[in-house]
Each structure stands twice: as C-alpha cells, then as structure tokens.
Length: 472
Image (cartoon, rainbow, N blue to C red; front, side, top):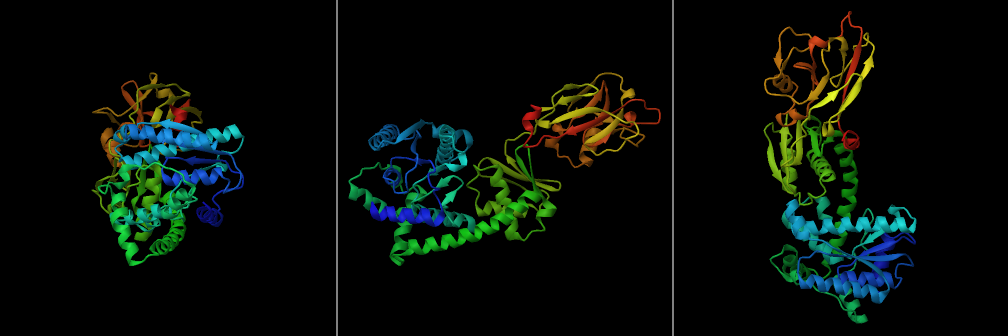
C-alpha cells in the first residue's frame, strides 16, 4: 500500500482535502477502490481521525447486492470501523423522478451520506462543515468521465471532469491510477467485490473503459497524466468564469415557486459564452438533479432568450419556455398555486399558502401612496366582510381612474401575467364587487376621497423561497 498511500497523501496535501483531525465518512461500495480507500484511512495514512463508513444497498442486483452488503459490513468489522448500512430502492426512486439509474443512485448515496455525516458531527460536538465524505474515485474514473462528456457534448466546466473536492466531498485517490489501486490490494492480499455490470459495454462508461481508453493508451502510454493536466487547467479557468457567471445568474434571474425566470433583456446583454454559463449555473442551482443538461440544451436556452415563442423539454423532467419578458425553466408538469378562498378582516391578514399573503393595516387617509402590491382603500366603502380568492370567469371591475368596467382577464393580459400564473393572483372581494386585483389595479369604487374617514392599506406579500413556510 505504500506507493498508493504516497499518491493519495500527495493529492490530499496538494489540494488541502483533509483538515487535521476532521471526522471522515468513507463511502464503501465493496469495490476495489473503496476497499483500498477504507484500508488507507484505517491504517492512519492520513493521520488519526474519527472514522466511519456508509454502505448504500441500491437493491438492484438481488443476491449480488446482498453479498456486497455482507462483504462491506464484514470488512468494517475486521478493521474495527463503525459502518451504517442503508437499504433503498433506487430503481423505484429513478422511476418516480424520471432519472436514469446512475443519476438516481448518486443522488441517493450523497443524500444519505450528508444525513449520516450531519448526525455524526452532532454526536461528536463539531460543526457539520468540519466533516468530510471520502469517495474513492480514481484518475481512471476522471478520464472515463471526460470521454463520456466529450462524446455527449459538454462545455469546459464539464470537461474538467470529476473535481478533487466539492463541498464536504473529497476524493483522495483522484490522482491515482486504478492499476495502482489493484496492485496495492493484491500486494496486501485484500479481496474486493466486482459489479458485473461494469463489464457491460452496452453501458457508456463500460464501453469507454473497454474500447476508447485502450486506443488512447496505445497512442500515448502516459495520456492519463497528460489529460489530467489538461483537465486541471480547464477546472481552474472554469472556476474563475463560474464565479463571474454566478453573479450574473443572481442578478439577471429570479427564483420563484421552484422555477427559474431569466430576464431576457438583461441576459441578452451578455456575451454568448457568459450567457451559457449563467443559464447553466442558475438552472443547476435550482434543479441539481438536472445533471444531464448537455451543451446542446444550454445552447437552445440561450437561443430561446431571443425567441418570443420558445418552448423546449429538458432532461430531469424540466421544460423551458418564454413568457413575455422572461424565459422560464420549471418542472414540465408544474402548476402554479391557485389562491384558495379565505376571509380578510380589517385590520388583519389572509394566508394564501404558496401565493403568500395579504395584510390589511390601518392607514392615514391622507397617505394614498402605493405600488402595485400595496394600495390604500376607503374602508367605509366596504359593505360586507372581505374575502380573497382567485380570478373567476367573467369577473369585471371598474379600474381606478376609469369610467367603464373591464374584464379582469384583460387587465391581467395588459399586465403581461401569463395564463398559467393568473390563478395565483389574489382578488379581494366585497361580496359581489371586486375591491382589488392584487398587484394590478385597485377598483375606482374603493378609492380614498376627501370624505374618507377610515382608510386601510392592503399589501400583497408575495411568497419567496426563504419565507414560503410563513404563509402555509
């Protein structure tokens, strides 16, 4: 294990992967790479530190999965390492979320790893950020991922392949070749489990491993190291550009009710290269499961910024489309919340769930200032208890400053509120009369006049990602 340990220690030191004494949770599949990594940690190759292992049984291969679980637990018992086993039906999870098995398995593993590490850090009395999740990816995994992404079509960020670390996740073997791992295991007489599906060349990774990598190796026996340098350069440049793209994504896109809404005019001011990065960054921040978003999808989204009728399905059950001045990315089956009927007392508030809430507060009749989401009404003009619900077919009102009535649907269209979002716009009613189409127009019948003796301010507090629970 000495040669492998030296490689791993050099990687850890070069990239600062393991803070001194940090607790480490090793992801243990039972395969050769994870077995080697567990032995290195158990032998103190990275210093003394709290150590645990996690084995996730995906329940995909029947008796073989059971044998993997048994082998993993017996290995931990022999090494004196505490292990937690989680059994989870990854196939059902994949079907439910419209994911492929590889993506589903990765999501499940990391979710359970995060939960286990958080719980363990609480037991140890340390901050969760101090812990690390050790994964046994090797240089060969990184090379194979590069080829897979290159074949599928990917940008520089994706071509930098598997990173040395991501958050609490660290990969001490990422600069070590798989051949060195197998030689180390053989030298110590250590056994491991093999997944037969790894040899199925109908799967892309297995095909790359069996057919493409050997060709590259014949052309250049040292191609792994050469490609690693290229991927590192791509990763460094990508990190810089990604920080810039994150700023644009934050400033030019809004996240509302679990969807991303890009300001088309602002996004079109960006150079196309930066627009691609900003789009990808914003979408993956909101929909991490959309890891299969390829360069062709991102290019289509950038093109869609200039297309008033753009619409396209995306991986991960997502759909993108233009709505007036925005380009929206949301779940393809998403339906925006519809305001359910509720009472509004004066003063008081109405909780509208995912649509936020309306607050009624005492106001000065002399203060008629307002914005679309905040108006002052003449409470004396209210004839009955106010209610709040959504727009109904045929609804009409006389907008402030007008002599005739107009359909609410026309007012919403004028305000460029898309049809699918109109059910989430609150309508304040006084019996059969409409007081306020929230965020759009106040009724002329409830305006404050010189005869007003009691004024009330109505404020629509729209829901945000941070305060959605407040209104539920």
